[in-house]
Picture (cartoon, rainbow, N blue to C red):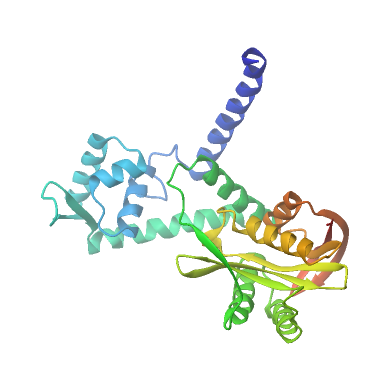
Length: 312
């Protein structure tokens, strides 16, 4: 078995090394100075951490960035000479010093940060909205697979209560505008769905689940009655900050289990082909694609709607 798997493993290694070479060219890591500056990519990264953290210590930066302590120490001394960095002794441990950018340091870092954002924007501009979403999802997947951070905070699932319908409508409107460019007519569609759900709510055959994490709403999903035998899954949403925790999968599982206990024979749902993460959750849960239709809606052209079904 070990001998047979070696070529397969080597193929994966070669593919990752090829990607590394490609991406280092994309972000200019091989250049002596990045973002039209005198600073290396590592120096800019340290400046970024100093600008976006609350007074970290040098040991924290070494651990989180994987830097050699001696290398980081020389870099920090250089920043001090350039009046970019200030140090303050820790009140709890005199051996530790808290680091922060000076006003001059923030002034120097600001254009570097903007050029970094502009470089990423130029990289994304040639891509269609769907391609941009695919790229971002792929980047998140790479980070999730390779990250070794401690397990994230737990989440809880509850039924809906007053105030939740406003949140569902608002967050659908905001997120689908930010991520897919859907205009306020999509928000109006969501408002109509939640309004009908509340007006005609049948607790024995319908349900809304709300996910909470750290005291904040992190996601939602609805199961609505379409007929005596058919249930419809609607309005699955997971906050960007809570994605990758399995919340979407759990919410869909709650829908399927409830639908079976309620006596439905089939579940259906309506979605868009560009909602790649949601489509993956549906497929994993046992839904299959039953039909597609091209349409223009919510200020977007060339959308493809999909109907997914599952026999219970």
